[in-house]
Image: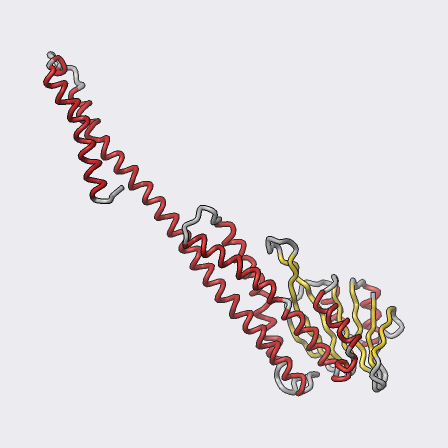
Length: 320
């Protein structure tokens, strides 16, 4: 489904749907064309009216592209990614992939599912058409900035969970689960796969006078690049924290195992003299030792005194 937002010389925003205005705008008109749930016929229409390269249209047919920036003479092709939570458990993350065609006085965006940041920018431009008059590259900046800013609530949720895991590990809480740590690490790896190439893309857009980006708009893209850089550094730092938490968890589990083994060893040491005494005096002699009350009493006394003395010694040495 196509929808078109355009602003003419009079500065009034006009919104329409359908394919009638899906074409390069006339002189003095700036046009944003948004395509959601594309199919082959709609993509073929873009080729016919905009002469887009078949490779870029092929990318729009299969939404599994990494963030990238490519120039094709009359326009630039930009792929950006965002994320959306699909559950309260932060797993899995749904990737929101957006393809942008930025040309002379027009911006064409293609996506499969609704993208909340893009919808927010669309509504904002309807009420503030003066922003569109600053150029379609500035509209592209607004969309990219909204997508990048949508990362921050997600990062806050992840940071909260990481802090909970750290508190549980350092407090040696029994509630901590190894699966929680690995789940968070998978989330950070998923973010890193997107942020690393996206950082390079916005670095190129931030260069003054690069391609179709005006030097005045490049300053704003530098701010987006700074945000992506901060998010990427945060992800790297949080991965290190989770790695440390995992090491602490494994060390704590190893310490608990060692404590259990130590106590079992001490318990075996306590019963070892009893085994010796009862085994030695329980042998079959010609004259049984236990026929003497003195020997029997001494054996029973040894069975009581020796373990008690060993237990006292272990407790005094703080081995238990």
